[in-house]
Length: 260
Image (cartoon, rainbow, N blue to C red; front, side, top):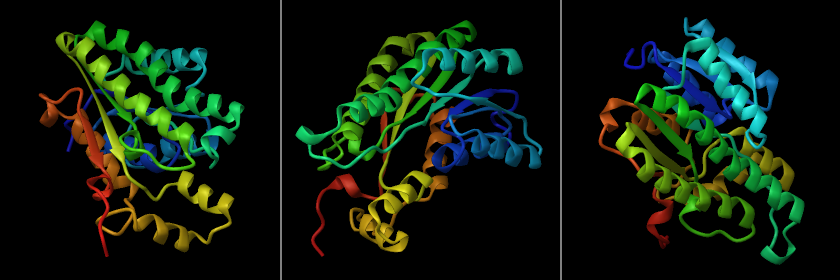
């Protein structure tokens, strides 16, 4: 269970949900983890959870849409643990529900800044550290909405489509230099972000998740751990010939419409 021993993993949005589950799983397998999140209390809780199990982790408060924050994040990984072997670019937000012509301009820029520019910035500053080692793995967390469309979430959908395209381009650029770059596209997952969406919409949580479950052929939403397992596999040597890949983990949502 220590396949990542003495390796360094940087995980953004690790204060909860998929990011926390991934950080914990990588730490369980021996990685030193750099926990990044804009939410300080939640990020420090993740570090404490890792420490309680005997792992090594450090928290770095990070707004991934701010270049100076991301540079400081990567430098913290270098200063504390000696570099970056794995970067899981998971930080993201949901945004409002609105028709394309009615979408608030400031919200558009905020969502693109965090969900797309944030992924690019993390790659921009992590890749040079990986090149120094001649090896590295990046997993970008996109979404099933990065492969299809969904009414009223134009900002989120556009950003996640961008992450998929950026992943493929970067994978082609750096494959010959020992860096693998992939994306994970989750369907609906039981996370704090989805809990918040239910609260904002004034929908009881159980009813909200029951409605989301209808999108999936498996008739349920995923747990953060299920997505983390896919991310960790992509980081592992078991995926040594996988790059530029978009791994869909959506319970069958994007297969097509299922009559019931």
